[in-house]
Length: 387
Image (tube, one colour):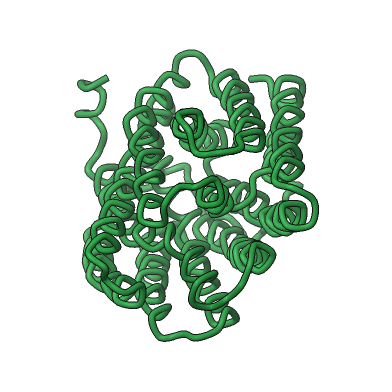
């Protein structure tokens, strides 16, 4: 595998480095937003579900738009630069707010940036490598992205342990934002093949293959049970994990995902994407059932979060590599747009349902609902998506 990694083009490594820097900033703030929301802005789980759901769902519309634009213009870089710039320089503004609607607006701006960059970045990654290396390329990208998810919480832990105020931590996010924006300007897009003609501006799903549409159905169902990861951190806090240790717990999850993302995604190049995704969805269901049944802070809680890291490693890169496999080259940006749209749009009902069940019924009911969606998704993947 190490020899294969050496053959990956510079663009793949650069995109990975950008994701590492960006996620270092984003994940430094991610674990402390629930703390900030509850301790400073005085809001609860239902508000958290509303903020995360609205931000992600709205941004998902832009993922489709940017994907269609990429197919039309054959240029990804401008959208990548704009997307990372918006997200990076919006996050530090959380330091200046005093009510949760402002947090909603800032999280919305952050996700708009993600919406503008995600589909163009994914299409650029797919265009930069041969089909036999897609799992490896997307796995490396996820590994570097998760490396940022390790560094960010560790920075948050160090700052919280040093009694640095939450508002000051948000201000520190300006530094990686500037570095990330600088790196995006160094991206060079590979030349398009001679037969790779421009397409008309067309966002319709009807133009994409039937098997891709069936895959989107599976993604929609799974996402309905895949609410914001912030609920996992909220659950850990309620089970007794100290506030300053929450970032460390999430860093541990990201470390496992970072270590295993590349080899597991590369494995899909050999054994098939759907087989690996099937077992990834099963792992997700087991994790959510376990977290719902856990009643206190123990070794089981730590083991469960480690297991969740394996789920992330086995699915994040593979899901996108499968999109590239199922879509024609001239509609790849649009396909990634639809994939990101579906995955993002269903986060709104997912977070609202989960937050409502969590607060009005019980954590076990909420986690059980998510596990059921994952199990049914695994079954439908086996039946509907055969390649």
